[in-house]
Length: 397
Ligand code: GLU
Image 1 (tube, helix red, strand yellow):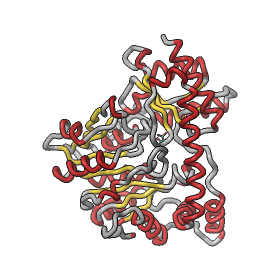
Image 2: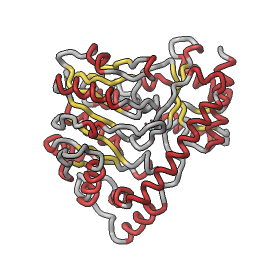
Image 3: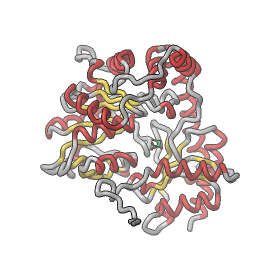
């Protein structure tokens, strides 16, 4: 007897990742011969630096082909702790390797953290717009994501005061992300300190996604770890994907209080086990060859900076609709002039159909009046894409 598939209550409300869906659509169109300009997924176009690729090849030849400990190889956990410790203020207790859990990308680290810390009845504040997957991961953990709208006059950032307005007795945590995907906004030290103080006052979990930390233009971005926060409810998330151009290697990590790390390891031990052994060796090379890594990152950030300026310039008069990104590699553009319930979807549909440019509609980040355009692609492609966006914006609907 055949029965239709009815999704379980675990995933009944789950939406597929919009960022990955746009990337897949752009890839399919390209494969079909449509010359699409893909400003969709946030993926650096650079090759992984040669010294990292070579270390990975050598590791495979040396036998890095088997299971490792679920939480990652000891040398990589040490290197991650050392990397985080370089940012700590003088006198702060160092993070230890035992606190580090290596996962298949920072996406899995975030998921593990949400599963470990939150459950039914828990509310978690999500500064909005935020990366699409935070909302869905919290739902998968059966917690409630509470979107907290950022201030349009302050690059759509939230403040401690704005967060506090959404706080209830059930609030258990807050998701932070600076530099921010999708806006490119970078929180100041003071803004972060105020939010950390509020979190401490209410004993919230702070999950700080710092995957874009090294990609900042006007001033260096601040890690919450630099601000001597209360560490007993802090989970730092980072990875090699963005800064080291290592998206496909799938290596991210969490640094958490020991009990939380153990819980995350347990979750991971039943879902994916260890991240790929060869990728862990690649990440180890990235984090331990400091001068080669710094040189590679500095070149890439320099290119992103140049593209940031070029794409803003390419928008011409339409620049007034875009937020000025101080980090990451996204331009967030207000397309509310397109009207309707979901101007971002309307705009991105028309942009793809009429101008062959793929972008992510702002509804993915719970702000349907915006679109996100990634400029992590060659300068001339980013500029051409942005000129087409400007044309559609000025033509209007
Ligand atoms: N984080 C990137 C983005 O927002 C990559 C795709 C994803 O995992 O969402 O485009």
